[in-house]
Amino acid sequence: VKEWLQTVVDKLTKEWEPAKCQSLFTESELIELCYRAREMFWMQPALIELNPPINVMGDIHGQFEDLIALFTLNGFPPDKKYLFLGDYVDRGPYSLEVIVLLFAYKVSSSFYSVVLYECFQFAFYCMPFCARISKIIMCMHGGISESLVNFSQIAKIQRPCDIPDMGLLADLTWADPDPAVAGYEESPRGAASVFGKDALKSFCDQLGLELVIRAHQILQNRIQIAS
Image 1: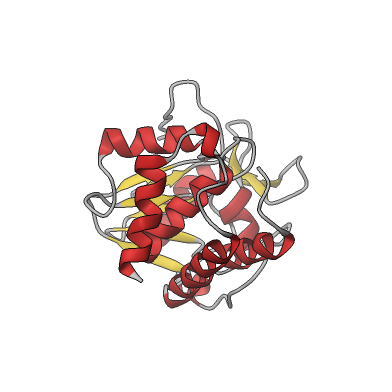
Image 2: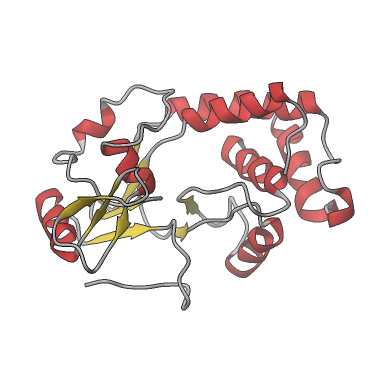
């Protein structure tokens, strides 16, 4: 299995080019990879505890060439550790390559068929929801949640599960900061909530956090720090 996974990685990092998009693997190989990734996700808690040094990455959105550029700049797994916060696929033309490479590293755009699509979807449903670095840095794709008052709540969530429109999981996945908001308000998008700086401070104080790292939004300067 280890040799097969290395072959998957080598094909994507050494042989891939746009002309070979979605042609390097058979459907059966990708289904096998999804099954193995799903088992890995299931074995992890819903809140992952991590230690630095670690590279925290935001949305990739199917931009495989950008993903390779990030690895080239910062170092490839497993030599360097990475935490990806979500939005791995869609929008970009090479979603399949992105998620296959990430899954292959984890275990060691259209999909091929409905069966393969469902395999990837089910693997997504098993993923952890967030991570904590050194107990003081919380990382997620979306944002903070008024519903989260203790980290034990996350451990009690049963997976696989879909993400609802409202509540704790919706906020961790889709919530956004809004400097015009005091506390929490329902998002105008109709899913999850928006939160203000005061809510962020209260959230960090209550949970003993010093920093929250999130993705989900495009920033002109690539990074924005709110204090």
